Every structure is written in structure tokens, then in C-alpha cells.
Image (cartoon, rainbow, N blue to C red; front, side):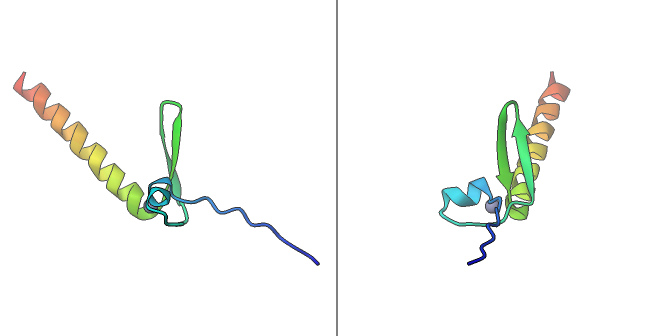
Length: 62
Ligand SMILES: [Zn+2]
């Protein structure tokens, strides 16, 4: 019987919740790589923007 195995990259944060969601991109920090779905990618981007904005505000005060 013919068989084809298809590999699907899944979102790491979704996997923590027990969900299999297709990853659309990956986040790399140092040597760590995380596959991300669109929702989680946008959520993490927003968090990093907030962190850098907060860091620049601290610089302006100093
Ligand atoms: Zn996800």
C-alpha cells in the first residue's frame, strides 16, 4: 500500500496547551528556537516591543 508521510511543524506555545497548530515562523533567541503559529508570533512580537519601549523609557529618565 502506498503511503506518504507529511511532516507538520507545530507551534511550541500551542503544544504546551496540548494543541496542534501549524507553525508559520520561528523565534530564535541565542541557541533556542521556537516554532510559532501566527497568533503566538504576534503576541510575542507585541511583548518584545513593549519590553524595548519600557527599556528606552528607563534610558530617557536616566
Ligand atoms: Zn500557537
